[in-house]
Length: 218
Image 1: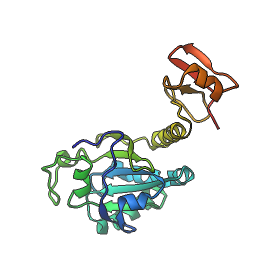
Image 2: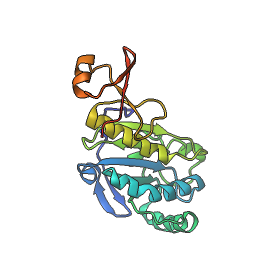
Image 3: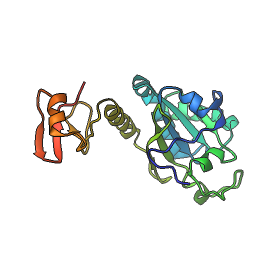
Image 4: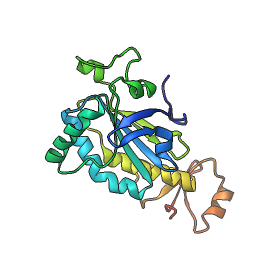
């Protein structure tokens, strides 16, 4: 089954570079980013893992945990981590799941259900295991996207997305196109003008009855 926004993120037990985890227990009361890779020692993923390590302090500030996944065994990840440190200039500072049997990849519908683990594997076999799942403290999937193997993911956008999702969770507002933290936000149509005036006594802009903007709440 496909995993959609609003679904509960499937729980699982897996070996990682930081020991065995039970996913929901590992998330605890925080937000979480699960991002996956088709194979260790792949060029695009090497750059991604390094950049995510550099961004991790920013995710920490947002009460968000980061965990990666590769379909190779955990024992391979340590060697790959050395390459990442050497080429990207940063140490991988979050756990990496070993998923050699594709258990998590299949659980999260990242790959064809008939795919098998082990070698040899072709690029076509691996192509779909480049997904990102944003999961809330309630263990529900808040956002998800998948990239091809040839295009590096934009993790600055994931950080921006976390900011938008957390703002919505706290203040029930939406964010417009290309929104950045500190810019005006949108009052959802589910909030009446009367309620909006109570909530925002300093005022808001009405561009159309269905499009009202207000200064971002603190």
